[in-house]
Length: 123
Image (cartoon, rainbow, N blue to C red; front, top):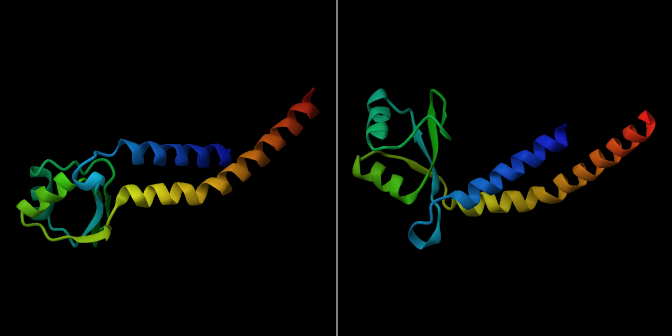
């Protein structure tokens, strides 16, 4: 079960990486954070057309978002201050998927072996 979950996570990460908008310089965007966002800031973000329902990580102290360059320009236009956490989000997810792939493949082999053993013991 853990293997299937890990495989799904890796699959979704890969899909996310390749589905990002291709904008300036072939980069997909950045991960940014906004410290202590007030209700006014949240309202400005929403008015800029940025969706906070999907992909936003919000605690009381910080709001983290993966944004395209166009969305970042909207923040700049609205004069919203932010910190860049990850400069190239596509590269980040790609490197993470490559790094995690060998472990995921090993775990998948183990699960397949367990499944074969279980199937043999049932028949």
